[in-house]
Amino acid sequence: MRYALKVTLAAWLAAGAALAQGSLETVATFGSSTPPGNIAIGPDGRMFISLHQFYGPEARVVEVHEDGSTTPYPNADWAHAPGSDGVGLNGVLGLNVDRRGVLWLLDVSGPEHAGRLIGWDTGAERLDRVIYLAPPVIGDDAFLNDLAVDLTHDAVFITDTASPETSALIVVDLATGQARRVLEGSAFTRPEDIDMAIDDRIITLGGAPARVGVNPITIDPANQWLYFGPMSGTAIYRVRTTDLLDETLSPDELERRVERYGDKPISDGSTVDGGGNVYITAVTHDAIGVVRPGGSYEVLFQRDDLSWPDGFAYGPDDKIYVTVNELHRSPPLNDGTDGSQGEFKIVRFDALVPGAVGR
Image 1 (cartoon, one colour):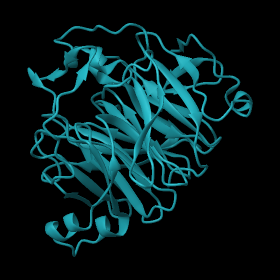
Image 2: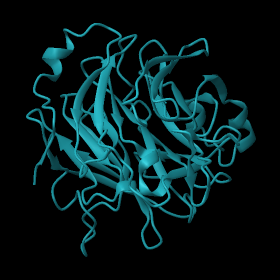
Image 3: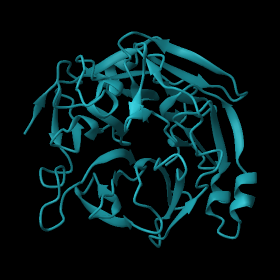
Image 4: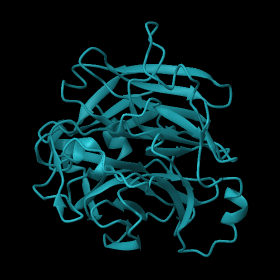
């Protein structure tokens, strides 16, 4: 089944060359059946988005086509809830495409099923592998949120937002399938005690003011540094990938190797360019910002229609793509009511410094 978009995508690359650096272009807008979550763009320019389950859409992941339509992806069976044969997705938020064209889907866990890291070969259109994420690596409160892929070290790094006390990173060895939980409950993964105020309202989750742990995550083009931080936090941190992969380090030793990279607002997604500029979605300010290598934060774009900018993807055209999904108006964050106002979209802008996200 295809869902019509209001804006076609046929001129992505052609139009991109004509844009002045610093401008923000709306690439596509979506109807209510297609609330975007995160976004991934392959080395061949193919675009994929997860559909945010806070809005309850039937599909989990779709491919966005150049002709302005979407199709369930990887196929109709896999893109929907699992059947009796286990084929399907329970719910996907985080997704990423590596340089080989493998789309990594982070399938959430639940009371009766483990979480999964699913690799789908977008070139051959076949399942690459499935890695299960189960106790004790994840707990009953797990919320598998986002991920970064590191093919230099054959690893994937995952943010498990979980509860404020148990928020952590998960390190997955793609060669063996082994997964480890690190930095759980650390100062770098726990949320700070700050309110999330949007449209003159304190956002609540589960009946209490939202306090969301580690969420934004990205990796530099050389796969040397992993950048991350709590959504409800005022700092972005980084740690060397080699330290995360070093199983001989004690929890305290690993914590001592984490660096504070710079300031940030309450944020959802992130990505980084070849110059060490870490881009941040500023959800409480209707804005997209950047943390410079010196640690300072500045706003790049601020518009009323950037209503909860969410996920980033670095495109092969050296443009940065961002989803916008009004998430504070979704039922879980809006007292059970869908208050969305038709501002689901993808926007893009030129990277300040070219350099693809590490894959």
